[in-house]
Length: 359
Image (cartoon, rainbow, N blue to C red; front, side, top):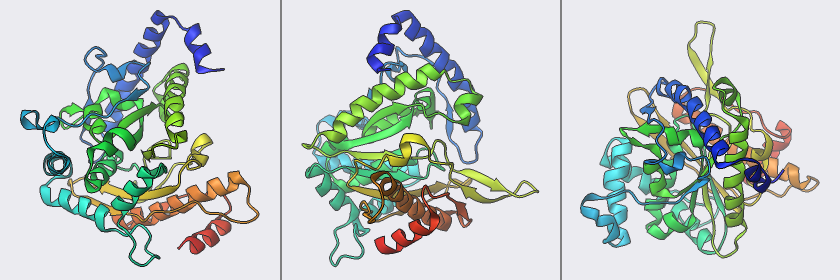
């Protein structure tokens, strides 16, 4: 059934009723997030007049730079705006200017292709790919939920031009976030400062637990999916897409005493298994914030699509996701100091062979 047909079946009154029901489920879901270790998230409330992104029919929220003091974001050159984003916005989010400067430096200096002599830095290479109309995916673990915006924001500052924020940067984010605030400010406003947002409500245990209407999930996903697919297919400009491919953040693994002894990635299911199909390169970005507020991260190298003889297109797509997730798994293990579980989408042995070839 097409999205157009669903819209015709729903009157404005029915859409509003569905929207209200959707947000009724978001409150307890947000409260669960706010109780997690290291979380600074709280419930924003439902006010679509003030926060239009809360409307069920707003599928994509455009990018908008954070407001700098005295309206400087509209009158300064790119270099000055990026300085402000790093020294004010990122610094506040990460806990200090030195930390913000280091993460931007890592995006600039981490080699995009370590096996190539004189490899450009990640940020420069991503900018080049986007200028050539290529698509790039930044894949995050989502243990710390704002990692999508943090990674894309630091990378944007490292690329140095605001046009990448407005024209190329995209984030796939749960519509749940429209009901949340972080450090006293709407999460949407903080996050849209680094790129547009394509809203989704991925199905999973949480959507069932908090009774999110299935019809709302379908309506939001199809609406944003059509817009994003059009952008990905446009050869004139590249898409720089930041996303967590699992349905939820990383989950703790506990022993019989209830102690956290490791972490695991939830299963990657459905269309997410082949979401790297339109991507010309993928960038693992590992990030963590502990209960004391200390942040740590690792910027990965770019991983290009594998081509294994004898595999179908679907198998190669899943293998690509495995290569990226296995790299991200290793990086998260180093940050957390604990083992991380990931179940490959294809045979583990085949994945290991392909990973060795990629390296």
